[in-house]
View 1: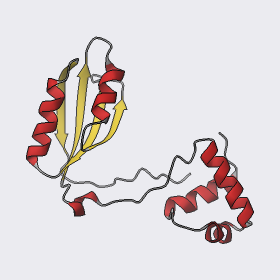
View 2: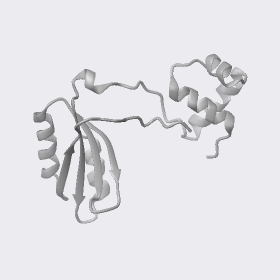
View 3: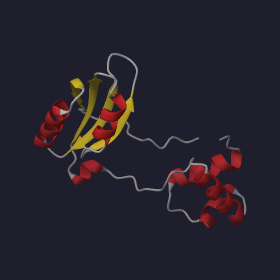
View 4: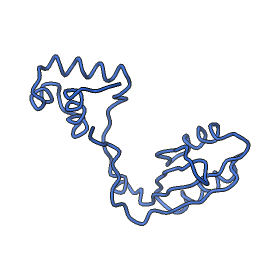
Length: 148
């Protein structure tokens, strides 16, 4: 879907604060409230806006371990494996990638035991040949809300 300048400005306002009212966004963008409402409905219906959520600092909730796990999958079962992995506790993202590995998983854990259980569960899954887990030492940036 092609977004015009007004759509982009509206989306960017919601990226800054998804709790903004239509009236607040309209004032910041310089359009009528009805325009914001109509544009938001169009963006939701087209799937550009998939939902609204809070941005959580998981480290403040005890999730001090973030990992990036590479997975090699056998026998053309990548989609099935990715779906199963996506349902596992702690998993934030599952990416189908190019290169020497087939998938990349981003996950967060409260302790080493949870990470160990996750890794062992992966290795027990059929069609997973091997994994390579990287423990994140520090995070320079973690923000999936890119301004458009």
